[in-house]
Amino acid sequence: MFRRALLTSLFATGLFAIGLFAIGLTTAAQAQISDNVVKIGVLNDMAGPYADFAGPGTVDAVRLAVEDFGGTVLGKPIEIVFADHLNKPDVGTALARQWFAVDHVDMVIDMPNSAVALAVQQVARDEHRITINLSAASTELTGKQCSPTGMHWVSDSYANSHGTTLAVVKQGGDTWFFITVDYEGGYANEREAKKVLDAMGGKLLGHALHPINASDFSSFLIQAQASGAKIVGLSNGGADTVNAIKQASEFGLTKRGQKLVGMFVNITDIHALGLPAAQGLILTEGWYWDRDDETRAFAKRFQARHKAMPTQYQAGAYSAVTHYLKAIQAAGTDQAEPVMAKMRELPVNDMFTKGGVLREDGRMVHDMYLMQVKEPGESKGEWDLYKVLATIPGQEAFRALADSACPAVKK
Image (cartoon, rainbow, N blue to C red; front, top):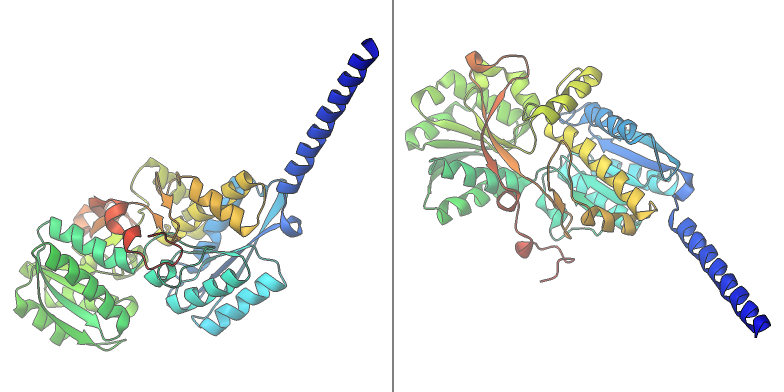
């Protein structure tokens, strides 16, 4: 009896030890980092029209995120590479393929220019690598061309048009006239805004189409004034928006009681324009450096490195990279699919947003902010440019998941 009990005890102990050993092997297998390094690629416009709101500043934001994380994840180093896609889809895809196949980049981030972003997202999907789009605007990234390994982190054209129009109408701006660039991007913003106006009892009183890179907006501004609309919407971007704002100021449009609303405006545009020209402009941003103590603390550190305040996209880069690294830590691997699962599971709580949610279509849902550019006498410093008119809840700012065209979304 004693011998049988002893043998039973030894057998059980052996099984227990084998079980512990197996668990140890499983844990070791799960905690895998490909090529013994986590490599992040920043792909954007480093010297062209999008360089101010993305460009080298995004690289600085990613570096800050990696440094704050400790420089390693799961005991392996984190490396950063970066390149200029020159706003050409073929250049962007060639760089992405090189990064994935040769340089073993695990995640690519930023990609201003929707054509580049969509092309690179498809390459990453085929290669089972992650992309995080920050400053491309197309909702196709989370629509028909969505990817199980692709994300859209900051804003998009739906939030810029639908969310902005909704917030402005709630503030009493119920009659609109649009100055719209004559290509699909401009039409899309105007169409989405009109849907909101129709649904809320507002009116679109007219529009004027202008060619891209227009130099003279005087005739369009005269039409806008003659319409009597409370709101003049600028459905354009870049140099066109800047020129329209400058000439509206010279024309005295806002002094006559109308308000300008920009559908795609960044804080770097306002800083370049100056408050005398841009004062009173209404716009939407996903983040503002002077919102609270936490945003101000990050902005101070970023400015010390970059010599400018962070844009919403640069702040989004810090947030997205931090969340990505947290997901690797939680998943025990840098393989795309388990990391994506953790990124969706974990809420986004940082200086960019609180309670952010990454949906199955890749859209990160967070609050947006309706801003108005300050008058010169209201500003207390070089970058003190905005006042917050309203918070737009994420569920109102972004297209509802039920309306998503993403094939991955269960209806």
